[in-house]
Image (cartoon, rainbow, N blue to C red; front, side, top):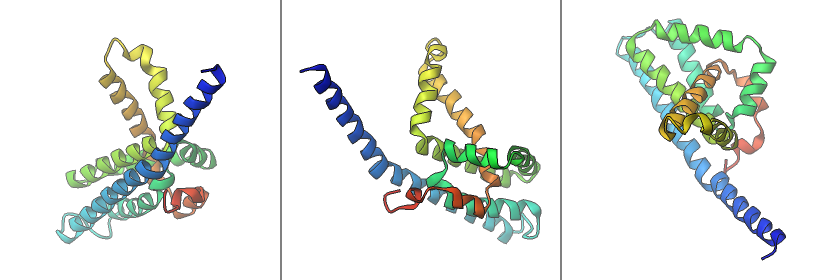
Length: 187
């Protein structure tokens, strides 16, 4: 086999693997993440029904609104989209930190819902940005070899989790910036 044939064969296999991921695996991951966010939104509503949280409270309004927007944002929530939002609105990280403080000062059930939602969005960020996630993993391998691969994955996941916080400051109009391909039947 010549070098050109070998390279074309490898590129063909890689293309097939990317297609399988994008067309079959990723839509399933996205749907599962959306279902988790629907569940978290329902749990937030149940807190109001149970009387543990006031419907007029800022915590409820902001968390409920954020969960609704996040449900729509899951298909296109990747590093490129997050970077565009942060560039377009430089105060987004400051507002996200204020929102996190509001959640952290709330009742334990709200904190649990919030932290689960951040984790869901971190998984969405990784799944939708698999190329960047792999680059972060490979860049950190020299550091992680002595510490173990699980430690590496934990470090990278925590980095993605911290980057997912601005998702809670998304507005409906921000979703207009998502590429249409994120909302196709296979996306």
